[in-house]
Length: 293
Image: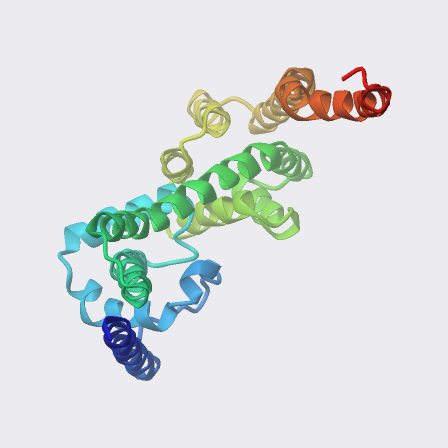
């Protein structure tokens, strides 16, 4: 009897939650939310509940204090995900997952007749840190891409300056002809800042603070110093391109030298035991047939 009651209660809760989600989704699609023109596609785990995120963003996140929105926007820009989600959408996704994960966990436990508040609290914690983990993982990938593509763009810049263009013109050509990715987006922002009236030093300084990578900081400081000292921008860019290429090859050599060391643990734990089992199995079987074992 208790199982029937629990099953009926679980079914009722499931129907109620489904109706609530569908209703909120319909309202979210009807909302005139913030335009995403020019923005990248949001991550896959957010797209699954994007109507709910739009709903929370419209009714809650958009009414948060300006300081919270500004700090979140600065964090998104620093981690290179401002092209994917807005500050309100990021905050809304955290709220949605903090509520959704425990709700799904409670429904699963109610259908099985068990309940554990610690599990619900753990699910809420997972929902809270999921957007942060995505942002950190995206930044790690972006930083690696920036370091890898910086020498390519420095080569473009040095060639364009050598052809007679100024720094802004060379930067524009590099953005148009260079490989797509994070480095292109960052240089596009620098070019936009220069075109909007900022000095080259200020635009590059904003780039340095935004990405916070040592290689780009060295490049920015070298260009700013060359501008202040009246040195040749062309020679500075050529030197920076050569140095970044050298460092790129050195990092590749270091990774190649570290590969055998990193393979030791998988070899000892997985490859060697399987090899010994394959080699010794026929011998053990033969001894067993002879009655020795």
